[in-house]
Image 1 (cartoon, chains in turn cyan, yellow):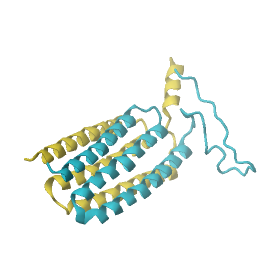
Image 2 (image 1 turned 180 degrees about the vertical axis):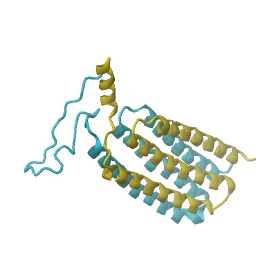
Image 3 (image 1 turned 90 degrees about the horizontal axis):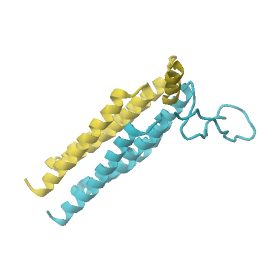
Image 4 (image 1 turned 90 degrees about the vertical axis):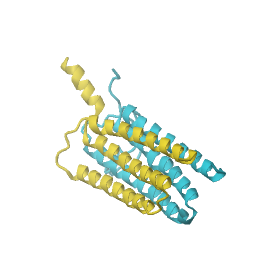
Length: 124
Length: 106
């Protein structure tokens, strides 16, 4: 293996490891919102390092890889935010693992838009 | 078969294992938001595997396929989120409420 191929394999391996960690988190974490947090790891850092390694392996296609990384970094937060908002609005219970609710006062015309704390149920 | 291609094959195998783990969540996900999160991650996995295959086969045309896969995965996630937000049926339960319900039944 040449030096370039070694660098390509190392960077791609970093991305694959992050993707596996993200997949394990999607299965293991207890809440929908926590799973979204874990899914963002694969869609930003995991796939962008794989794309950087492809850009090193194909030097002519490096601008396309930069465009793809930019696309992932723009679309992943948009998709996660849309998904989290839809999940929050259709959630009948609104109980969270993290015990803190930033969107609790959204849609209400309060002068001080302070998020209020919510009580979670007993962990059993 | 050079060591470079062997290492790329191992990486693609690990990505396939990760994809199977995501499909577990897609299968057992108790509600639609869980399955949408799993679908989003599966689309990202597809783009990564396609890029790794492009490096394995020296096929530069597959990089455009990865671009299209990324865009389609984003569109699918957004459409599912819009459907979930607009749909009249909102009767899904979170994990804690299901657990409390089950304990209360006993």
